[in-house]
Length: 360
Ligand SMILES: *Cc1c(COP(=O)(O)O)cnc(C)c1O
Image 1 (tube, protein in one colour):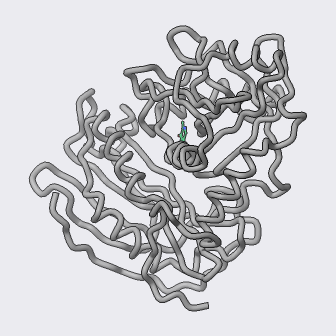
Image 2 (cartoon, rainbow, N blue to C red; image 1 turned 90 degrees about the vertical axis):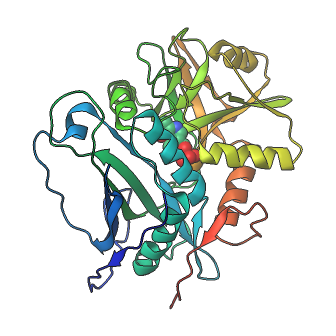
């Protein structure tokens, strides 16, 4: 797809970022939006004031779930520059999700360019506080007003921006996780690798049940044998064994996390022995019994690193590292957030500056 031009229609407003923005509850003034049909490809591209959408009741994505999304962030650095974290990777992953769901591809360079422009226009919405950031939600969905299971012929792509608060308002606190062996999230060769609504709908019942029991999240096992560790809620998982850091290999049932990829690059750079392989829940519990389990942590855009303090599987509950964040967890968290905030050089080329004149 070649680059298309886009229109800009701005709304004047007085930006007030709420004190504790939380997650996904407040939105900026503008969105980027474009439409797709077979004849014109992507067209109607524009940055415009955020408004409600209106759809026919037969609109396809509502009934058959043809939809995919991304979640990434923009940060304000210590020198007051606004940067995006690995946006090309996120748009490439959106394209991978779209391919699996028979939806059209977007031009990644074009998407990064319009995202920069959109964030520049709404730059006053990028929080100044160190723990806060601007969450970016690009998404695509089929909009034919037709009932019947087949790929939609028309689509909409939107980028929505939301200022979000500190993930750890009370500091870096390990979470309680329940290993789920009654329900599965996704299956190999199914939609496990896609960021698509179906996977999140599939996770709700088990997650709500875990929360009622006092756990923060669910650890999913593989859908075939209910034996191998897959991932946690909206995070990939790493198990720190005595002499090896293990993360489940990408079998098709797991989301290809970009934080996961960044952590793997750092482990390699730091010369820490690590592998992407199958790891069973029994192996993790046996390692704990042998005093060889040093830590477990999740990785994802929202939290960056989240240490697991308690893990429950069947009738056994283990305390990991005495409920303290692991040494490696803290090192990774500090490294990644320091890069994102421009406190240390971006030696991997993860940041994309939003080239706007930022005025204080
Ligand atoms: C988004 C997501 C992740 C984390 O991916 P990042 O690219 O690191 O944010 C992991 N698992 C699931 C199911 C997700 O939706």
